[in-house]
Image (tube, rainbow, N blue to C red; front, side, top):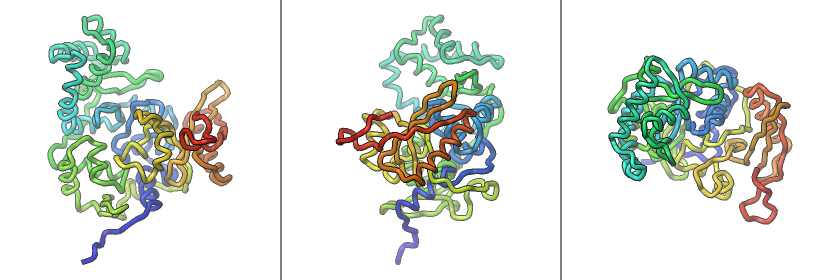
Length: 388
């Protein structure tokens, strides 16, 4: 019997993924930054300025509007997936940590030994933090580290970062309100008073549903890599919500997507088609998948992640494909963007880049200019332009 699974090509999977991400079209209205997070579930957020732009790009919100969603307790940052900072709904933190924290902390046991952070030291840091943040107090990273040092807990090297990381993954703290350009630590249970309570198969099903809402089509391996949960758990989650999903085939591999006709936020959006996007580094459009080959050509990967060091540069995306890099320089006069494609770009595409830059300027609330750079050849290839 012939399979009824739809087979799609590269252009189609990129079109569908961009639409899932809220990038294939320009939203005229969404439920602000919170609506963008509802679509993406959680967005990688170790680079705070870039992470905030990921939300502004997908919601049409300005930078002050995005920051306000953290100040009012709607959104937070924590380390729920892969031991890496993410932005997510405050109400989702508890059930996600219940699902992922034990596995993450267990995987870091050797690292704690190397840093000489025993259980007694971790408990001392937790008690100090709880006392300092009690009653709704909030502290920045530097002040918390000074607190540890004053109590005789060394924060030298990576010890300080690991202590802050451990406190959040174990459910003591979360990054909540802003103070200038810094996000402050607060006590998780005090700051997040409304929370969802999910566990077991229901939690796995919700994770799969929410991941696919903002990233489909994707494979089970993509979800397992992103969440750092076992593939068997992800398959259980897929089975839990199987009635909401359908299979498509891309490059001979089964990908999952929400059933046609049930797009996120159906009926609440009006779109204008856009073909160019200026994505920040670490954006979920690339970071959301184990296999990024549909959007990123192999020869462009060393330019996007130089030295394969895990640091992703801001990217220019044209019609779903990573087509170049960009950087910015702020001054009193405004913000100057330098856009450097990997190959020559048509006037029509440059016009689309100009519209993308204008959206970035609206987000920042500042005038934006665009400087075009010569196309970038492969590293070491004759004629390669210097990276921005």
